[in-house]
Length: 397
Image (cartoon, rainbow, N blue to C red; front, side):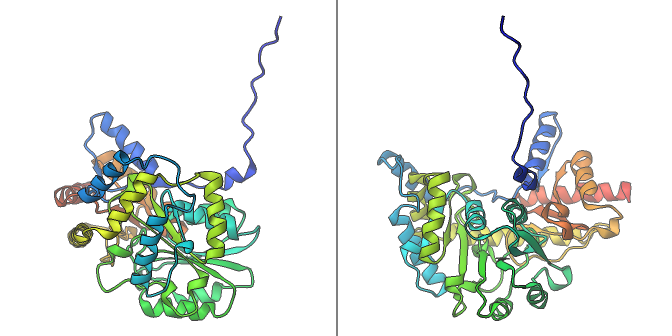
C-alpha cells in the first residue's frame, strides 16, 4: 500500500523577499471587485491613456497579421523597427544612433530589469527618484544593489535637486536613474538641471538610465535628454516606448537605446527571457513612428486640460493642495492638512465614495502625505470624482 503523499511547503529563493510590486494593479483589482458588487467606481488609479490606439496603427497591425508577421523575429527587434527608432531618436535627441544600439522589448519594464541584471553587482549603489516608479527600487533590491533615494520635493515642483544628487554619489555608485516627465508627480527636469547632472557625474564611469517614456507628453517646452549632453551618449541608456505616447499599453512594446556593446548583452537577456517581441506589433510600431502624429498632440493637449481642471478642483477641497504637473497624466496633491495618512485616505476614498486613487507611499517612502490621481479619464468623470471627494471631506474632516 502506497504511503500518502507528503505535503511540502513552498521553498522560495531568498531574493523573492526583495521583490516589490506595482500597487496600481492591486488597487485596480480591488476597484473592479467593488464594481462587481454593484458599486460605482471612477478609475483614477491606473497609469494608462484612456484613448484608443490610433486607427492607422491598428490597421498596420492587422495588415501585418495578414501578411504573415506572426513568427519569431530577432531578439533585439526587427531591423525595420530598429532603424525607425534609431532615426527617431537621432532626430529628437540630436545624436547619431545606429540600429545596433537599439533593443526592442515587450514594454518598458524589461529595460529597467535588464539594466539592473547586466550592470549591478551585490552592494553597487543605484541613485533613483523617490517618490518614483516603484519598479526602480524593486529591481535594485532584487539584484542585490543598494537603493539610494533622492527625495523629490514639492517646493521644487518635484524636480530633482542636483546638489543633493551630487552629495549622494560615491565610489560605489554604478547607476543613476532619471525620469522626466516623472511618474507619479508630473515633474520635469529642466535642461539646466540635466546639464548640471552631467557635470556632477563628470568623468566617472557611471551609467544613467534615462526613463523618457512620457517625453511626448510634456506640456511646456521641448523635452531634453541627458543623452544629448556632449560626452553622455555612451553612458546613457534611454528608455522609451509606445505605451504612453500612442495609447498602446496592451501592445507591450518598448525599447532601449544604448552603446552597441551593452546592447549585445541586453539582447542576450531578451533571448533568455522573452525570445523576442511580437513581430506584428513591431510592424505597427513602424507606422506609429512614421504615421500621423496628430493623435499624440491631441492626447497631450487633452491631458493638460484635464490636469488644469482637476488641479483647480482639488485646490478648492478642504485639506488638499496641488501643483500643476508639467507633463504625463498624473496629479500629485498634498493631503497632509487632512490629518490622514496617504494609504488610509486612498482606501477610504475608494471604499466610501468610489474614487480609485493611489497612496503616495506606493511610490516610495517620500510619497507619504500625497495621493496620485491619473487624469486619463473623461472631464465628466473627473468632475464627478471631485464632487465625491469634496462630499467625503465635508463629512469626515
